[in-house]
Image (cartoon, rainbow, N blue to C red; front, side, top):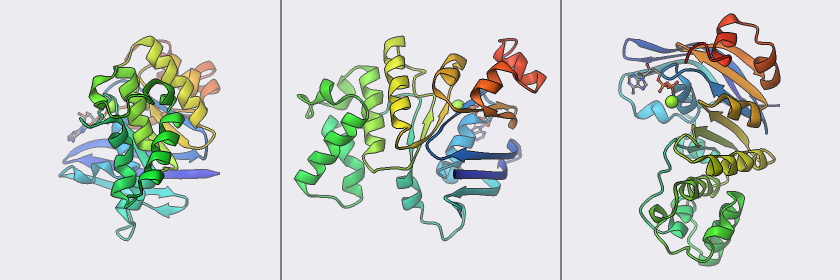
Length: 250
Ligand SMILES: Nc1ncnc2c1ncn2[C@@H]1O[C@H](COP(=O)(O)OP(=O)(O)O)[C@@H](O)[C@H]1O
Ligand SMILES: [Mg+2]
């Protein structure tokens, strides 16, 4: 089943044509990877999926992006609902400079949950979901910025999970992490696939092959090739995809 559908999307930053006629179907409970050299539009595409680019002046998007068949750019679509349903994790771990507990409780609180027992339960469940509960359960009051980078990133994942999203967007979530933390996040991403639809931008092609079901190769604002990860990496159909995955550029 298609969780999200990207249909003939063009995006401009002022005069600059950053996304060119992109169409892709994002399958429910699969992991989709976006790969490609830097500056080719991967983050732009990802941010379009929960309208993060609404805040950028001069940013204009045409075409349709559907979530469960509904156009998220419809003026009647509620942006708060969208951001709750489509969560995001960024490249650099960015916990708020408050306690681990308060980081994870932040989203639920803004959605009106005040009951302590209920918040406790959500915080534990989210930290467990992000595979970091055992490491932080005895220091929930500690400032989230004081733990290691890998732990901070998993706290950010817990923060995203706490509002029970359906889709999780991850923009190079391991690029600032050491190899061990990277592997932990990759394992976590595989576990999360049972419950969530995940789209992950990665610079690391091994990571794309390790974690994803589908891969889209971006180049200069276009999607050159999109399909099963195994096929993209073993029998790329386009010469440019082949050149990129064999390390000839990028
Ligand atoms: N806010 C912005 N204003 C103008 N140009 C932007 C903005 N954000 C990104 N771009 C440009 O759009 C292109 C795609 O950027 P981006 O989506 O960040 O690429 P990637 O994530 O693949 O590295 C780049 O040329 C970048 O400079
Ligand atoms: Mg990027």
